[in-house]
Structures are given as C-alpha cells and as structure tokens.
Length: 186
Image (cartoon, rainbow, N blue to C red):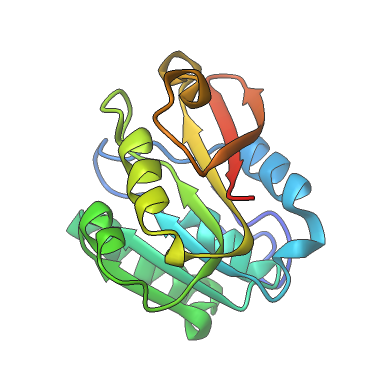
C-alpha cells in the first residue's frame, strides 16, 4: 500500500495490525482520485472508518487543504498517525478516535467537500452513515460528494427503497471486489 501521486508519491504506508480493516487497493484508490481529479486541490475531506488513513492521506498528498480521520479502533488511529508522520502530511490533518456515527449526529463544526465512507462490511453501516449525514447536512459543503466503498454484494438502491430523501446517487463504479458509489445533495 502506497501513496500514488502528489507530494508524498511513492511513500509506503503501514497497515493496521490484525484483520480489522480492509485497505483499499491502489488500483481502486487511483480510480477514485482520477474521478475526483483536480477538484481535490484545496478541498476539505472527511475519512470515515479511516483504517490505515490511505484515502485521506492520498487526498492530502494531492493537495487537499484539510482531512479529518475518524476511526474507533485504537490500532487504526495509531497507524494513521504513523502514516501521517511517514508522509510528512500531518500538518493539515486531524485524527479522532471516535464512533463516526455519533460524531456526525452532533452539530457540524465544519463542512466537507468530500466524505469517504468505508465501513466494516455487511453491517449496513454505509447506509446508516448516509442516513445520519442526510439528517445533518451541515457536515456537507455546497456540491459535496459522499463516496461509499463497499463490496458489490452489499449494494442497495437507496432511491428505490426511499431510505434517502436528499442524497442522490450520481454514479457507481466496480473495481474487482470493491464498489464505489457516489452521492451528492443537489
């Protein structure tokens, strides 16, 4: 696992010890940032269920102004902090050990251009996270995107089930056993 592009290009990142996280593949991460493109420059980015911090660190490396990382796992938090140290990108980052669902229920202290949601699989946490964000859209900047990383078998069309009223699915892309689903709040 490495940083693909930007200021920290080529730097190797540490993995979280054990099997509690499922890091994004370099191929999927590269595809994600090709879709986001130059819009990442100067953007604010929220990395939910951050694990190794790989996605948020890639955002910082490519020019994001600020990234907040949330994870509940102490080992993941330590790994994110170590990866930020290794890449020299910690100056514009905030790492918080907390339950992201509880945090997003609180009044927003800032808004984000991108919210990346990559929770543990098969618990419908991606849906719960989108529902919490929809109830508290102050976390979203104007024209913000929420990007969900799930296994394709987890996917549900939330428009058909009417679970979401404000967030609208824009696109979905499959990369092997990973599905990226893009939402915004028009």
